[in-house]
Image 1 (cartoon, rainbow, N blue to C red):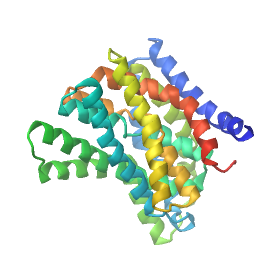
Image 2 (cartoon, rainbow, N blue to C red):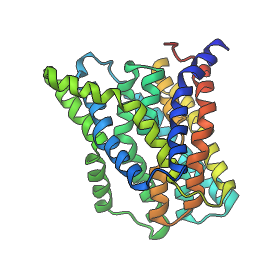
Image 3 (tube, helix red, strand yellow):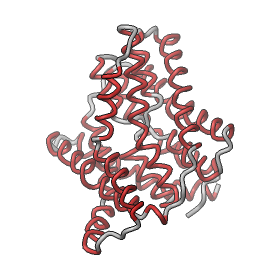
Image 4 (tube, rainbow, N blue to C red):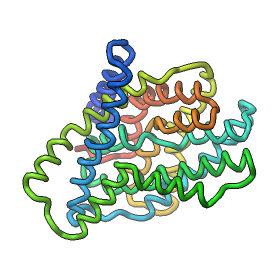
Length: 315
C-alpha cells in the first residue's frame, strides 16, 4: 500500500497538469490557434532539446536490451490482431474500421505523456529504452495500420507507401533529435557549455509543457457518439496491451527494470495520432476522439496501480 501511495503522489501532479490544459481548452478562452502553436513548439523544440541533450551523453547511459523491442512490438502485433477481432465480432465493423479500432488499442501516447511519466517515475536510467520504443513506434505501427487498411480496401500495399511512411518518421523532430543525439554521443565529445546550459533550460520545461499541451489537445478534440466502441478501445489499450507486454517480457526473459519500462509504455493511453488516422481513413472518428479522453482519464488511476504491481523502484 505504501508503494501505491508513493506512485499516486508521483503521478498525480502529471495528470493534474493534463487536466489544467484540458480545462483551458474547454473554457473557450484559449484559441485553437494558440494550442496548435504551443503543440508545434513542444514537438519541434522543447522535447527534441530534452532528448538530444539526454542522448548526447550516450556513453554514460545504460545499454538497451534489444528484447525490449521484441516484447513491446510483439505485444502490439498480437493485440492489434485481437483488437480487429473484437471490432469485427462486437461491432460488425468493416476492415478499415477494424484497423482503426485496433490501432487505438496499441498506439500509445509515448511522447507527450510517456516521456514525462517515465522520467518522473523511473528516472534517466529508463530513458534509453523509452527512446528506442519512440523511434520505432510510429514506423512500425503506422506501417501496420496502413497495410491493414490497404489490404482491406485493395488487397495490396506498395513499397512506395512504406518508403513514404519511413521518410515521414525520420523527418519527425522527436525521432531526429534522438538519432542526432545518439550519433553525437558516439563521438565522445561534450556539448559546449553555453549550448548545454541552453538545452538544459529547455529540457526543464519539457515535462510541464508536454502535459499541459496534451490536455489542451484533448480539450480541442470533438467528442461525438460511439461510447461503447470508445470504452472497448480504452479497455484493449489499458488492459490487454500491458498484459500482453508483461507476458511477452517474461517469455523472452527481459530483466525486471526493462520489463517495467515496456509494460508502463504499453499501459499509456491512446495517442492523438490515432485520431489523425481515423480522420484520414474516415472511420470511427467519434469513438476514437472519445477514447483519447477516456483512456487518459482512466490512466490517472491505472498507472500508479500498475507501477506498484510491477514492483517499480521507489525513487
